[in-house]
Image (cartoon, rainbow, N blue to C red; front, side, top):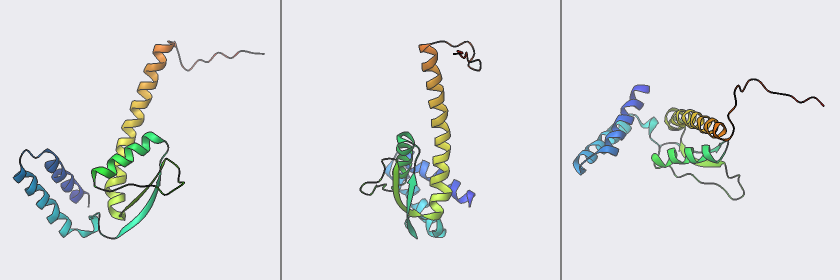
Length: 138
């Protein structure tokens, strides 16, 4: 299964970076042949509605961007939390492609947030050692 998903990712990269219309059309045709051969990974087959609850607005924006990359339209119902995302997608596609990609980008996002936070704090006040905390006794 992973080999098929890798092939689809390569074909999608060809679609994104095609320099001419015939290159793009050939890559789209190749993707359609793969999806026809393996219908279980097609986004439009066996669609189920999923509720995805993200930790914060940054994670929500990331998840929504990945959904839109694959032409999946995220939405929310009235009175749902801002960090809740609803999608209709194939379960295999969600587990094998969408969620794995989201987790990879989440790691990168969190690493960047930690780095930026540390840089900002060091510019505000330079700490000698974070592990040593001075406690004031009352």
